[in-house]
Image 1 (cartoon, helix red, strand yellow):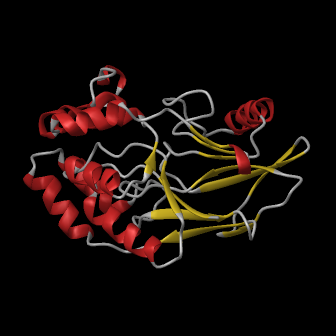
Image 2 (cartoon, helix red, strand yellow):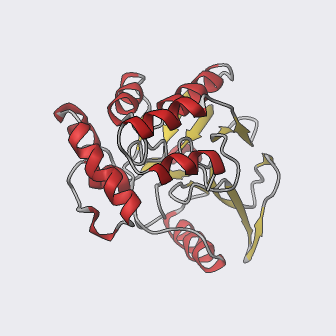
Length: 244
């Protein structure tokens, strides 16, 4: 089966449309979203309705939890908090209900694949440091998980563990080996933070045992202008251009 994993859409409709168009050209059987449909940009309702309308499997991100009212954005930095408060004013009740009903994780037992937003144990926890990676590989082993896809950092990244050895994988095309465990972040659709403003996603073919990262271009100027017109902080628009 061929999956596509996307994450951190953050209300960027133009980027989401471009990525889905690319995915549709690649014979993908199922799309999985790793959370944070909303936040930062100007089309939260449209992104929710596109994802729900296409039946894309999705888990809850930390921005989704705040925008739906399940948790207050008190611990967010001011840009993220301002965007969440703006987003709350835009959402229809049906879209709030959609976000509230999202699961925190998805598990695909046939392939021993786990999908999370932040870390194996937490929606809000980041996987950044080597220690974070080691802790989450340990959690995966305890849970019988072979591959964990995660988001939240907005940075495309892949780690492999063989025995007790952990390695960073720099290639965009990865052969999945039977004796290894994998922690993989497809990167962000709507708000990349790795210096490349192009949306990033990943495919995983369980038959070919292969993962591949992709980048696409989109109408970034249109999204930029929408952020400004919506009265959202200009810094959010500028970050679209810089990719940070």
